[in-house]
Amino acid sequence: MSDQSPLADRMRPQNLDEILGQEALVGPGAPFRRALEAGHFRSAVLWGPPGCGKSTLARCIANIGRFRFVALSAVLSGIKELKQIIEERPALDPRPTLLFVDEIHRWNKAQQDALLPHVESGALLLLGATTENPAFYLTPALRSRAEVLPLQAVPKVAIVALLERALADPERGLGRMEAEEGLLDRIATLSDGDARRALGVLERLADRGLLTIEGLKEIGITIMHDRSGDAHYDVVSAFIKSMRGSDPQAAVYWMARMIEGGEDPMFIARRMVIFASEDVGNADPRGLDLAVSTLLAVERIGMPEARILLGQCCTFLATAPKSNAAYKAINAALAEVKNTGALTVPLHLRNAPTGLAKALGHGKEYQYPHDHPDHIVRQDYLPEGMQQREFYHPTDIANEKTIKDRMAWWERRLAERK
Image 1 (cartoon, rainbow, N blue to C red):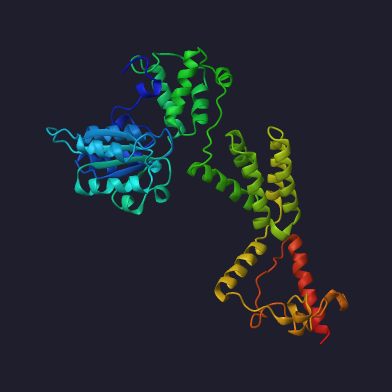
Image 2: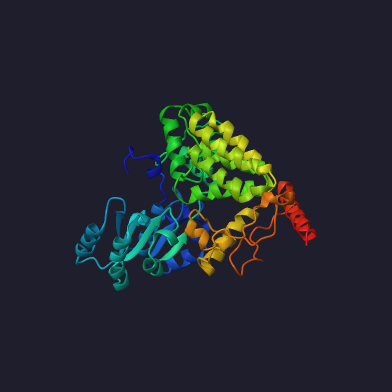
């Protein structure tokens, strides 16, 4: 390997013992490692976040299994390249072919289906790598023929150990360089489990002679945030669940993670509008007012000032009383409509804009509530046969308790008129 190769390539593990952070899969005595070393390997898909060692593990698997290793990038290659690999297999090479397809989730259904006959016939063993959930991106047929092997983000302590190894290694690493105390820990924190990124940051600092925490600030390294994949939805889920759990500390932390990682502030604001209705609801209708106002203000003001508005809205919603009664009500009503179909609108509730409509009884016997005491009157507003159906059940929380008490008061007043 050339000295000009990136540090991450030079420090790439050469065997399973050098792989850090994946002990459950390839550590000493791990079931998968035992099977691999015993010569038992079947097609598989490596699923894990960036920089966790998928490509490295693929090469180690090829070496241990003595496979003919062929690599494709799903971004750059397709069915044509797959056919070439099958057709150009060396006639005198008895080794099984291990086809490594990086970012296999990028292949469409037709491309994935093209793999199946070759995997089934034994012409090749498939080893895919993906950062995305295989259940969403790989066809059922392909998943049924390839074991999914989950890899984890490299733990912070393992990344620190890797950086220390890179600093000390005179052949593959940087050659006994010294770093300011705390720098490696800070790099590991910012790398978010991505060993490749951590080594890249260390190399940039070393090239500039800035192996200090101040040097880290100078090159402008920020935390990682995946804006479209599984990691994105995990952080968003943590944000929403923290607000729902009425924990403003956690909610504003997860929001800060998204902001610092470059998330679109409008996306965050839209999520809070939905949350305000779904999880706060009528317990405090001000939540929806504030969320909508925040959405409009963020659009007009932009970052970095918009972070202040987002923080206000987030902490308000997290500490607001919670009710999902309105959310449950619309879902229950939609389920009823799907179950019963388009039931007939009662005659007294129908519109009567013409003489013909009136002659047919539209609007007849409708009672105008404002003509009655308390502006309420007993009459049927639901289709025939559904008069006792209830969808909205207010809680005893905050403003919604007032709504519940008002509805009960209406019932008492109507009962007194009988």
